Image (cartoon, rainbow, N blue to C red; front, side):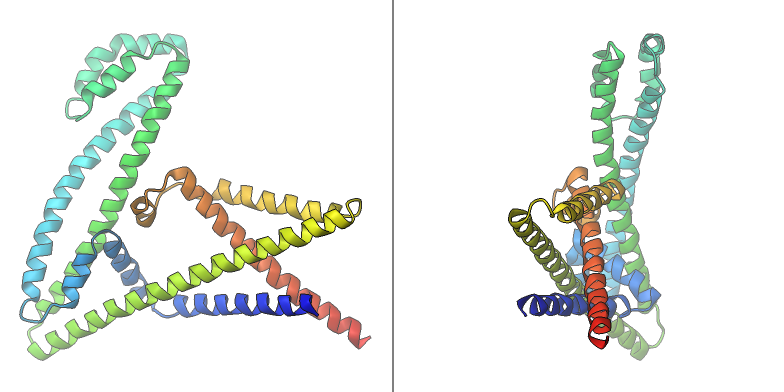
Length: 316
């Protein structure tokens, strides 16, 4: 009886979780979904932009547009400088990765002083890169040096992508506000601004719903995994010889986690960067999400199949 109640509870939570996901997914049309993502990107990096727009009036909307347009223009110039440093490091890395023998390394080192002068002409870390490569004497040293540069490049690239996406989102929001501000009709301008502000408030409510969905999903995953492990351990202790099926299930679960980690992206999202996550820890989050979906689907499928099988048996 207790097992049946437990299955019902897990199934009910799973259904609620799925319903929340569906409500969130179908709450917007495609345009609204794009705007929601853009606003979330802005709020993850600079929520003050949205806060100020929410309090804007038709009379001072133009001031908000001018202020943010100026900020975006300056940020775009700074981003171009970051892109230049990123491209220089990428070029240097690409050249180093093409070195596959001691002879090639010796040849590259011989030409490096003259080559570095042109390659790092506009590089902010010219001395660091030059000195770092001068300390490379063998292919093993080169492999270690490349790994260090790759770690540095990943950070620069992630920061660049986050800033680029933020500026793209901010520019889109400013463009929307600009179209509203240029409306000839004062009444329509006020109506459109109010509609935009209502959308922004709605996005924040949807973000809260999204967080609830994620929390419930994680809770369900944790409870499911804990129950799975608990029942497995109990059965193994009681009857070890016949518990090979449980061990197979645990091995499959470990395999699912491994697959989730391998297929998970190491490209950090703005939120991941904001929380100071590394590429490895972010892949672990991806593995956890992948495992969650697989276990959730398997649990629901098992409950449904079990119910159908019991119904067939009781009918016979």
